[in-house]
Image (spheres, rainbow, N blue to C red):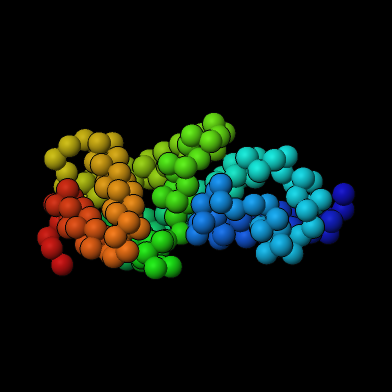
Length: 202
């Protein structure tokens, strides 16, 4: 396979994944058929099985690609120059709030949208979710530890417990935002986050 062909193949695969992510973030996994994704992506159905062995394999690849991009965004947020770690962490939660407040409070986080649904449908997808969310919590723990070391924040529990508590707090808030179609749960989550990190109210 020459370089151009390999590049074209990668582009087609990426196009299918990005189209599937956009549609499934709105509708969920089970409610979306392959034909809908391929039609939106402008890809013939026969080509799908060149890249993915099944819809479940596609779902696994979708989650892997999503979390790869998401973790890269977190790394960029937590290394933003000119800020202390407390400010970077609060910027992360505010960006979460902005992302999950979009599309009439339906958001675009696949962990929120697909977590409960696919964990019971596919073991491979469940494990992708587990790896991805573990990566998020690990980065939160690292940021919290760095914030404590530099003195920009303080915690009452250990780093791992605090990181898990915060991530679960925001996952729960995201679900309640979807249910209530309003962003009040995020205001409460921000307030609770500041309390857990011993940060003064804005």
